[in-house]
Length: 313
View: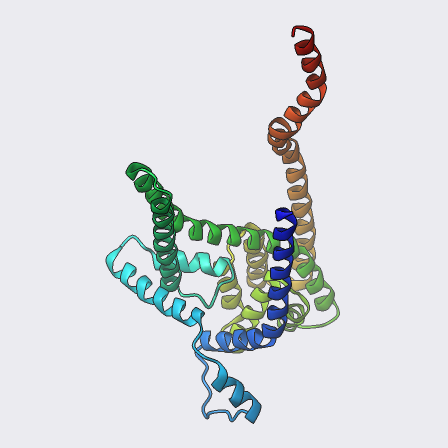
């Protein structure tokens, strides 16, 4: 009965979260657009007059918890960067860019790590003291909680960057095919990139749109592509950009370069799929030994064990 009650409460909570997210989605998209403009340093020359309803909604919006957490994280991150010299902002900035978190400064993320460390340490110490555990257990558990609070955000950031890079590598052959079709149709290469950036979705589309925004703001196309490699330094992305740059330097046709690159990308994606297929049997050994074999032994040898124990009293 308690299990059904917990499942029902979980379903009600998920439904409420989806309802709130559906209501706040337009505001989140508008805030994301404003945040991207702020990253590039663009500001309005004159204040924009909002409608009466928008002004009313803006007045009703109170400072929420996220602003408080962000300001606290910024303060802690600035303090850590001054105290800890090993905290490299450049490395952390690259990891944030690889994960697609362009609007999060490195110091703020370091502040998030400090907040997670303090929160987990205090929570574990409070729970341990309420359960009347020994002093050694409380101390060891608190140290482990502090270490976990510091390491878990970094591991999450690294894992998100890896997944994003894998998805970009998987979608890159489709981008090259789109560029081949548009370039051979007579479209310029920069215009073909613009078309592909509007068509593609996901991390690769975000990187392309950011690259084309840099190009439209006056940066050369070659420099914009090299910046894309610095943000997402993966083997497929390096091959894509270097092939285009070398083809331009040597005077090779862009269509021919893209056609050869498309073939190489397809071969590489097939090789990655074969590599994962070969790794599957090895990965299946652990759940097989830990979960399936014990169950089979219980099912097969269980009746025999009961019979033998019944015979021998």
